[in-house]
Amino acid sequence: MKIIIGEHEFVASLEAEKSPATCAAFRNMMPLESRVVHVRWSGEAVWIPLGDMDFAVGYEDATAYPAPGQILLYPQGKSETEILIAYGAVHFASKAGTLAGNHFATITSDLDKLREIGVATLWEGARPIRFED
Image (tube, rainbow, N blue to C red; front, side):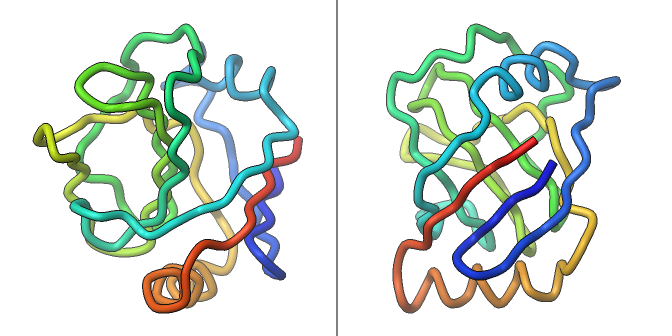
């Protein structure tokens, strides 16, 4: 999968063995375009708020502590549907407390650029993002 954030392009692998339903649902949504903003409670990550978008998946390979480059889908529950992309230390949370999201993809290229984007998003604001197959 290709992810474009602003002017930067990343390669990511889908975690189909660990999160098959989430990967299939996400593939059906591609290409997906939105904007990433910096997280409020979770640490070093950017996120895409998706409101009440329903991916119709339950929890699979869910974690509250993604590693840099890991991408999570929170499919609804205590908080709205969202996608979180970790670029550093993360404890995934919302105003309702700790959340666990489905680890469905991992960025495999240019993690140093991902950190740069995360820090720039914190200080300068939202960035466009596009997920492509």
